Image (cartoon, rainbow, N blue to C red; front, side, top):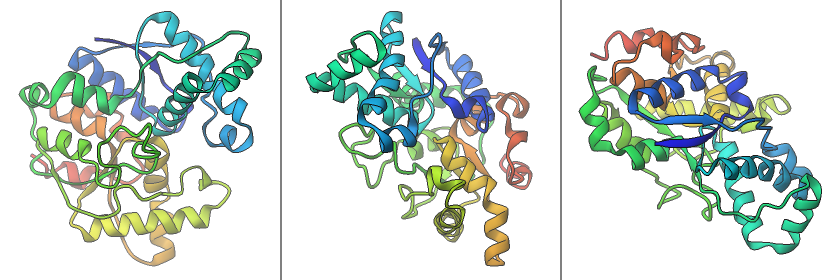
Length: 287
């Protein structure tokens, strides 16, 4: 299985452990991720908050490159997925926008490339039964709060789940590798996303509510599929504890790290040592 891989900016900086674990898991599962040559930023929130043509042009350039590779696009970042998928849809449907984007980037893209998230590739293209057969190190019924955030489920026209309010893809995947997903109501609530720098207090409040609910629901850790969510829930956790005076202590794993451990990949290769909230107490009792 080969895909055109769009890493996104976070995987080159704050989410290097997500990239490490993604590449390690892909290799273990026989997935070939071929990085899009010369890829550039998808524009994320700043572009679509500023200008519609810019917001479509930045993804279009990357989609054109993937089209030339003859492969579906796969990304691990929820924001990148959203921007690529929305631009893909808009450019297929809006002739005026398509012409404006063609003028901006010097070439025309009219849609046609399939945009996927890596979670979909593992769950649908590989399949849960095959992954379950590959498990060599059980997760010991590790109680996990599966957190999707906003952008994998919404807007519905590009969301990857049948139910945008109660998706189950992460739960099904992690249960297949031996974890025990907990029931909780905040799985698609917003963590604050890119407001982490400009509106830190808002992010601490939103992320704090998510962390508190996950712990109250019996979770020992959180699993995410978005680098922005991981940063807010992990990096801001100690600040939230100081503000509230309450200990949280929930490690925030990328789902690829938990899948990787289950199929026998080393913690070093998965970048688990890069987590801010210490995962050792949880991992030491999982077997």
